[in-house]
Image 1 (cartoon, chains in turn blue, cyan):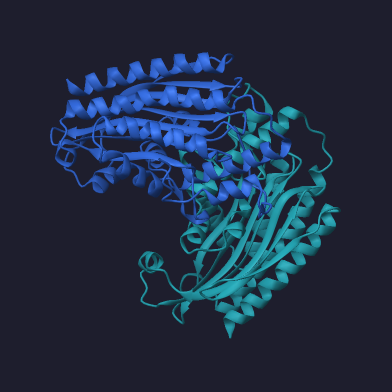
Image 2 (tube, chains in turn blue, brown):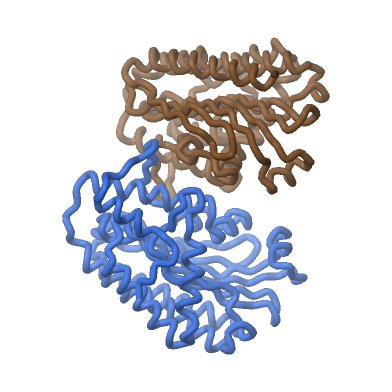
Length: 297
Length: 297
């Protein structure tokens, strides 16, 4: 069955990424929690904490199935009562403020033969935007996309800008990346095997890209003030995930495993009242780059 | 005009509470920010930070008016295009984990002669539930309610239990309090002057109750572990406010002043993965009391 093929490939990706991150971190290991969902299916939550590089991060795999909640049925306008969903979700909160937060998700969703699709994306949230890193990141994503379709990167880059936007702050969550949903033969011209190949290519882009960004920045010295700025940026990350993120909402509404869903939240976040940044500071420069529509490639 | 009478009385309450909190804290002062809303009206945001007792807290007054957003019109099922809303909102995050977080809101909302009401409430979120404090708190709220109507306290207490509930955690935000909305002559038998008197009585209950809870707990010694528990409980507070709170949602959707709306968020919050509490610990006792339907009076 196709769905089993997808979830097996996703588990392999989870394994490979975890091995790579443990090597890169050099100190922390993943703690694994195997969980079952009452309605059907389960997952492997893997969390790393207090590492050399990673303060808190998760690489989660799940494959769940069961009855579709009424709210979701309405939102998707489908008749089917059954769903199957599998995916790998990653969020990494690094210790050093110069190492960026990263998020990746690859997922496959199926209701029936005619209603199934791939979704996912990777996006980067630097506490301090380093333009060379942002360019490298986007360039590598473009390379991955181009192998499937040259139209993908510009389209999915624009979708990421729109999706990872903190409306009430009028700022993007970070420097974006790619975001896509509901990819199927009808709207891509690719068959499901080709779409799976694209999904896996996105998954396999994560490790070399993030380990490169870790290597570039892990040993940079930082001040208490820069750490405080990291806490502030993390509070914006928490706001996005709790107010806007569709995956988080879906998880909370479908009685997902709370600790797995909310592993994306930062280890420490601070909300001071009305924080100000100094003119021409690195912090101000970062804010000026948290905008939609910047062409990083 | 009635609405001006309400907003003038609310401003007086804001002044009185701020004076009292500065006295109780003994160190911090309120910083005031006067702001205007583009669509009409404005407010006085007053924030206290780094006090002896209060780590971060706000006592905000606003009186805004203008065009009703389409989404809100639909939600309220009204024809009117205009609204007026005035209120006082308070959230206090204390330094000492044995001093509880407190929230108060009194508000008056008006669309036209036939569509206007009072809403509000006070609720308490102890990091450690101290039953004598919770009883004192509820007893004083009951006294205030009873002066207007003996049916108010049981009704509004149950509403607070339902409202301040973190569904995905299956726990209440704290020990509750009172919560009410859309109070008008038709559903209370009180005229608008009497309803205003009730609203002001709630407002005037805040200061003596909270200063008493401060006095009882401010000098208690606490450990690093207890401070960490406070950070964890604050993360739940942030989850509630960002995921469920109607006032926060309303503010974010109507382009309210972000720093005033989000002043409720804790100065520092921590999300560790899958935190566990020790059997028979004070932390476990607290969790066992974060339930609906406890009769504290």
